Image (cartoon, rainbow, N blue to C red; front, top):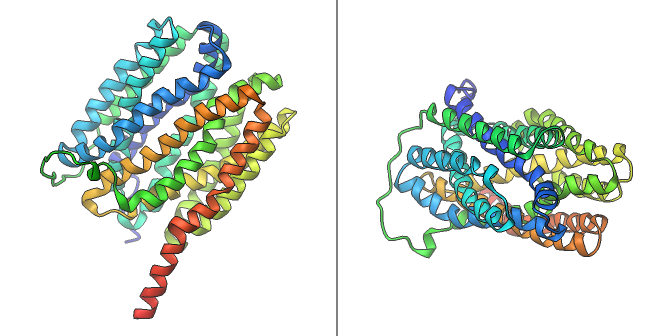
Length: 394
C-alpha cells in the first residue's frame, strides 16, 4: 500500500488542467471589481453581483454535472466544459456594459461548474485510495497556486497594461487547461443507466452535512476573494494586495505535506478544528489592519486555517459516498461551496457598502467561528457515535 504511486502523468495532467481553470477564475476575481467601477462606471455595491451571477450558474449546473459524469462519462463532460470555458473567456474583451458582463459571467459559471466538478471527481479516482487525503491535498494545492498567481498577475497586468491584454492572457490560460485535459487518461467507468432526472438525484445525501458546513466557510472566504483588492485600495496600499496571496500560498503550501498525511493517519478533526480557529483569528486581524505588515500577517493566518479546512472537507464529502456516486458527492460539495461564496459576495458587498470593510470582516470572522459548532453537530458527533457503536459491537 505504501508503494502506490501518487505522482503519475494523469494526476499531474488533471492538477495542471484544474490549475489553469482556477488561474483564470482568480485572475478575474481580483480584477473585475476594479473593471466594474473604473471602466463600466458602477457603484461599489454592484461588485458582488459579478461574483454572484457567476456562482449562481455554477451552483445550478453542479447537480446535473454530477449526474452527467456518472451517466455520460467523465471525459466527455470534462472536454465539453473546457471548450465552453475557453470560448467564454475570449468574450471578455468585447464587454462594454454591466448587463452583458453579468450575462457572460453566468455563461462562464456554467462552464466552470461543469469543469471543476469533473476534475474533482477524476482526481479522486486517479489517486490510490490509501493516499486519497494526501492526493486531494496536493490537488487542491493547484487551486492555491492559482489563487496566488492569478491575483498577482491580474493586478500587475491591470496596473501596467489594459484590461483587453489581461482578458486575452486569461484566454491563453484557458487554452492550456484544455490541452492538459486532453492528456488525461481517465479510468474506465461503468456508466449508470440514463433515466429521467428526479429531484432526489440532484444531491448526494451522504455528502450533505459536510457540504453545508463548507458553505459557511466559503461565505467567510468570499469576503477575501471578492473584496481584498478594494479593501487594500481603501487602506492605501493596493500594490500590497498581490503579495497578500503570495504570503497566503506560502503558508498553505508549506503545511500541505503535513496536513494531508496527518488527515490520512489521524482523521479530519485534528486538521479541521485548529483550521477554523486560525481562519477566524486571521479575519479578525485583517479587519484591524492599518499597515501592510499586519495586513500580510493576516494572510499567513488565513492561509494556514482556510487552506487546511477545504481539502479536508472535500475529502470527507467524497469518502462518505459509494463509488458510483462520487461524481454526485463532488457536485454536492462544490454546489454548497459555491452557494456560500455567491451569497457571501452579495451580502458582504452590501454590508461593506453600508458600513465598512472593518465591520464586514468582523462579521465574516463570527460566521467562520460558528462552523466549529456546526461541524460538530452535523458531522463529528455522528462519527463519534458510529465509532462507539463499532467498539461496543466488537
